[in-house]
Length: 153
Length: 79
Image 1 (spheres, chains in turn blue, brown):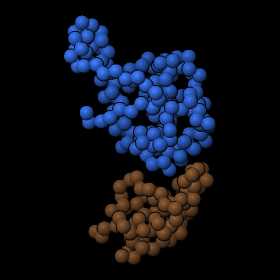
Image 2 (cartoon, helix red, strand yellow):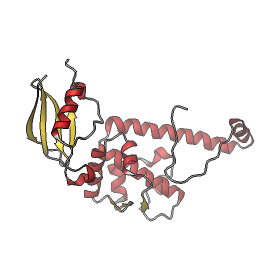
Image 3 (cartoon, chains in turn brown, yellow):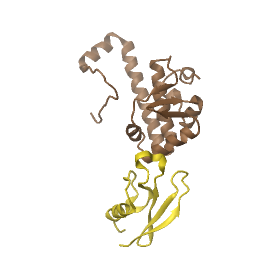
Image 4 (cartoon, chains in turn brown, red):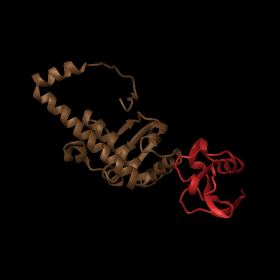
């Protein structure tokens, strides 16, 4: 592969041979559609990253990453309370949008100063959901989620 | 090669204390001193922006100006 995968938390991994996957997709076309959709989402996320690296400010990129984390968490657990124990360290946040620790510090300060997020004791909370989305120029459509779900107050 | 520092205030909204670094009388980099908001990095020197051979991003931070000067000198290639 041209990349590696890392788990932020404890995880159980399973390796499924391509042959078994192909057989599964032939038997269940809906599974094939899910994989296809996942590839489309991956491509959309990469387009967002390219745009972010080239055109967006550090604060916008950080807001985008944080908003995406919350949207994904809420897709898994819709009962979520708008705050989460941040599963990522700041070094990992730095790495994701290709920023230095200094720029991430400043961006987090900016987002906190604008009352969009709070971050204390490893707990990240969204204080202004639509404000954070706007700050991150985040369009929930690229994750193929229902926009009304992704932007629920 | 001569390297000179000139104090400056930088309007980046965060870390105002800074120096312009001139190599052979040409501006090569803008250094800023990181403020208290940077936690364990506070007080260290950061290359806010740089030119020419130092143009690539992701420079380290430095404990003092002497270390920053050494770094700039080591990376500078005359054009």
